[in-house]
Length: 198
Image (tube, rainbow, N blue to C red):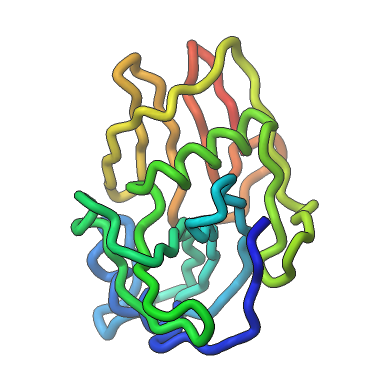
């Protein structure tokens, strides 16, 4: 179970994201740079209790119209070897000390737990309260067989695609928008010829 500390972060998560978001191909903000504001999200638990996992939702008002982004992040107490390209930045945590924040799509711990969420083996947790399920996060999975967690990660203008050697693709929609009834949510999986969604 993740423990949520009531403490300080320097710089803040929003400050890190303001610097990092313009480097992403799916960023749609204005030339002056993003003005992210927290709009929601949820957490997942690392079974080993070592890595913080957060799906943060931020709204950026810098463009012609506000855009809301889904940003999966992991927080680690030491650098993640081989993931320098995915580093969002470092923060000083008032309780835990130096933390390395990564784009979670490049962190196997987050990917494993996201697959567990989609398959119904993990429960989304409240973003701000320890040991409290986030009941508004609903995941469903159709199709046979378990998803692999061996992904190649590709960012494009539409979001992030995680593709297995077998051709299964988990797509994260980074720029969120209201969806009509029955449409895909923030995550879509093309798996064994069928759609799974969360």
